[in-house]
Structures are given as C-alpha cells and as structure tokens.
Picture 1 (cartoon, rainbow, N blue to C red):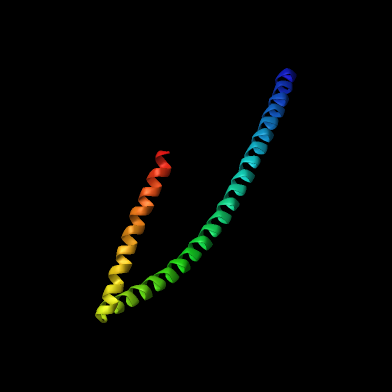
Picture 2 (cartoon, rainbow, N blue to C red):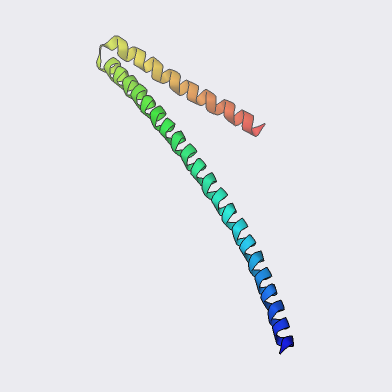
Length: 110
C-alpha cells in the first residue's frame, strides 16, 4: 500500500509539473495574441487616418476639376476666338499624347 501512495505522489507531481508547463505555454500564447491585437489596433487607426486624408485630397481634386470643367465649358460656349484657342489646345494635347507615347515606346524597347 505504501508503494501505491509513493507512485500516486509521483504521479501527482508529474501531473502538477505538466499542468505548470501547459499554463506557461498558454500564458505565452495569450501574451502573443494580445500583442497581435494591439498591432491590429494601431494598424487600423493608421489606415483610417490615411483614408481620411485621401478623402480630403479627393475632395479638393474634385473641386479643382469641376472648376476647370466649368471654365472650359464657359470658354467653349463663348465667341469664335475662344473656339480657335480651344482647337489649338486640343491639337496641342493630341500632339503631346503622341509624343509621350513615342518616347515611352522608345524607352521600353531600348
């Protein structure tokens, strides 16, 4: 009977040791999960601030483009002199497009 208690005592010690090892492992995993959660929080806050700044930038670009379009519409709808100027501007843009296309094709092929 004494032999059984000795074994039982050793078994309890082994079980207690294994429990302690598992508790330490679980504790390290929980602390790692906490670090990941904090990192996710920081990343989401940074992303939200970046998106807010992009919204502001797009708003200002929209205002700039709408102002430019209204000026272009006004210029097209006004007299013949402005129509001639508009044709020169369009012709210049087309020439710049083809020149840019030519230069880009030369750079990428060479």
